[in-house]
Image (cartoon, protein in one colour):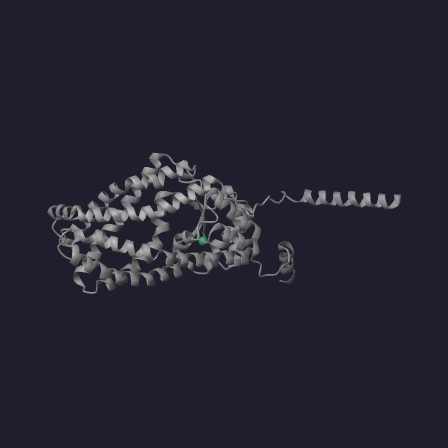
Length: 423
Ligand SMILES: [Zn+2]
């Protein structure tokens, strides 16, 4: 019996020593992963507040447009614009500038609450008021510079063509494409600094991952989003020469190596599955319906209330708030369709990421971090998710990441070495 005892002891020591030796060869112990979101009362309060603000934002915006029409502020702004300049096209542009300033002033309390006060209340940002105001001012300036000529062109189309919804719809297509191409090149750099990914090790691993995904010469950038927020994100943007994957610096600081590779697998899914093109095609298709119905409602409303609002005819710039209101209401009512489409695309990207990386657990733990970090309820009310969520709820994504293994029930490591052995 004693002999057995000694052998057992020797074996135990030997295996222990082996483990220690193996441990010594590895650079770091595997990170502790959590797959359950710690749901806090603060997180629930924040999520419910966001849900309420989503609807308040729509109602408040619509109420401002009604106010501008019903009090004839809109009509007076057009009179002021036409006194200042002569050409109708320039009158329309000037009117748009004045309308934007009035609307922004009326909307400012809600913008301030949503954009600055709430994120500070929930400790989601370090941004100073000056920096926030600077971003806000840049946003307004961009809105005016881009919006004024588009509004004037739209009014020109409305004046010249009976079925103007077709003109507006066709005209919107090149504008959308142009917008997607130039946003990462011209607009985004106005707010943040974009640089090629710094970490050389991560860069190499991401390039290898991209090569496996079939993305050649991939462009991966990091952006100093910590300027505006403590929350994290990554995204794919641009088209053709401007197409790129962007990682927020907050994400790089908070996720570990494998979690970043898993999240990037999702982003590469968007890239490889052409989600930007598909999303645009979906938007253009749906907007045909919006413009068609929009013209009917717009003209019926003008026939009924136009005189009371001081609007001369359908191409009067003073009718613009009514056009915006009709578009906003139709867009709002279509939210479940656009959100549902977006959730479908996001789910496809999750699936692609898992198939590419087999990093189920890092993907799940990164979603845990996303939820806790952004103070997002992982289990939102079903109606809210259906109406407005662009991504499946975090809990759904965690469950999916942990369960989706179509490549077989072998362990991750064994799966990889098998593949390498065969190929
Ligand atoms: Zn995505």
